[in-house]
Length: 610
Image (cartoon, rainbow, N blue to C red):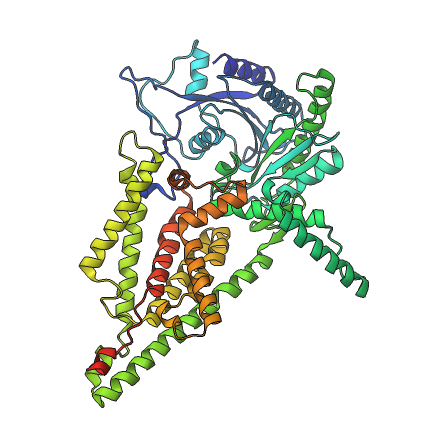
């Protein structure tokens, strides 16, 4: 509390309105009904009515002399009051210097809110709790904390607000890094479920940082790809081809160097991965949940943190950068809307827009309904011809034994598997109730219960093989299901749908019963069997998780508990990727396994034998 009191006193000396905000740590327990809702506080209360553990945010508000109080710009500085580091003190100093300057600015037309976020429970938790109280006032009974003095008690109880948030800047000073002779700024923009701030906000930050203050601007990248030998070799080949084509036609801009290609690929992979994961990369994600454009800036100085001369220069340049961004947003007459909201970053100043990356996804997904219709029609005609040769015009047998109603059997199989997938996705809610359970134990229990549930459902409703469904109709049903699932997922999180399509669609199209491949010649049979088995293994969710982990972190170690920890991480953040894995990807994989192991009994084969 001494740190908060000190910050409040400094804000009061500037003439700002101040208040405290006390919050509780977020509960991180799986609950199926809270997937697309905001996190709620859930902490036990002591018998005397005080919370057992809480954090305190400090808020200062400057009223704009030229504004009407309807809009505001938010500055956020996270720090941990329990153990304040030197870089956190420098972050608070940077925030205070900017706040002090803006308190004397006569050009302000939007209110300025400075949030000193108590990050002892995490940066996101503090900011999210404040935003929740800002937009949804809550009145909690009981005595939280009794500060000293009547005036200070009023600051705890009176939650102050400004206008609608136009934009937010979260900034902090990180550890010293060796980037040469220039200080650097790393931008973090990914919010929950692939949401991104308007690109114009990132462009403003990049332009002012590079061209006005001389910072080196970075974005998050996958370091393992930067040192990848195979990616370097591909980059050299592309660079050579580009040089040859440039000689043919100098107007073709194909002069990308190999190093730029490698760096751009690593940045692009990181952007797609972070968006597909569905978990925000910083506390800016809490603002995006309220449709507020926000970006996190992490300053990485190249000087020793206690060097006073270098520190003063850094505060000047960092403060001017933040002031420039505030001035740019302050001059806006309306919210950011002209630029893109859907994009992948390949560099701090380069991107791939939605109009470009939608094309490969469309080329992957659009043919699927056509393939499904062709398979279903082929299976239906084959069944009709077999039954017609035996029954000689029996209309009843034509429809019941191999005719136009056979697709209902395949649809029933799909519904049973979807029901199983829903049950499997809800099992962690009950498994997490087991006390003192390790991730490995939870994973084993999850797998065993999933297998037993599938056996019980097949015993109750029948398996795909006992129903006598032809494999072509089963495959058509699988392709139809994945088409609908990918289409819906592309609306929620496009990056997840894009990565899922690259894995699932080849698995669906290449799947063919292993017994049906015995009649092929040796080379086609070997290639087809190997591709089917390989795609089935890589399409299994834990295997796909291992691949993503290996590519992103460079670690290929296998641990059964890692899968539980990863899934727990996704549901804690209410990521839609969790729903995709278990409601779209897992049913498709199981149907693919059923197609591969299909006994290939054709409709009417029993009639032929008789």
